[in-house]
Length: 283
View 1 (tube, helix red, strand yellow):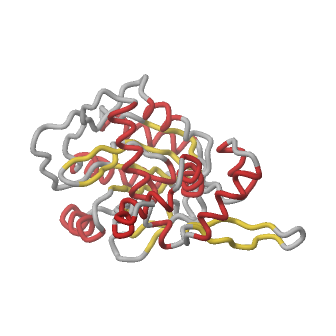
View 2 (cartoon, rainbow, N blue to C red; view 1 turned 180 degrees about the vertical axis):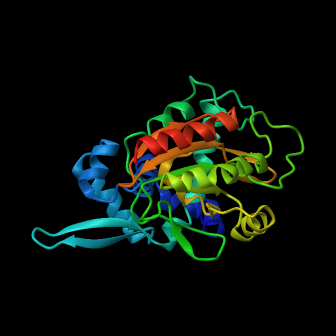
């Protein structure tokens, strides 16, 4: 390294990330693939190269090893606090790639049926949500994505409430209507034993203010740290100074398996009703 890079944060971060493989290892650990064989299968790396990359990331303090089996000895590789701090960078890289490499450079809060984002979201069907992933709720405590006693759960992501976009962004109408429709349908969801959770990248206090004003009966979770975005590779767009979720709905069963994905969400009333029907069927 050039001596001038010693005080450059960009250069030092690049030194830690190292190369293509390190970035993909972090991507897969964020997705919940924390064991050696799972990482090797997802990335397609040889055992020798993967061992080397994991060793470097542990040495840099981005990953930590956690023993889960003694005979033979086996470890899981988990994100440290420093590793979690890299998640917004991974999501920003994905957003840039979706827009400028896989897209035409335009800012949009929706997606075409032949887009990479569409394929990525619909590939979530049949996958299991990461076990340990929790997000801050409006009461300040971290909450699981799926309530343990729910027969099924509807997770819906939205860009944000009370946001002025400036120039209109395609596919990004106000999110108050969507929440109100879920509020109106809440009694039907509860009768069916189905939980509802709304998720945005807004801060918990912003969500709490909205929940009080609108008397939202279900939990709103904050993905301001981009943990869910990274774990599920959710599509995002930049609006009003922050990366925001594009609107989508996931129907999840009691075993945390994603059973249905609704994306893009254009006709909001229709998709709210559809999510109730699909969740009721998969109880």
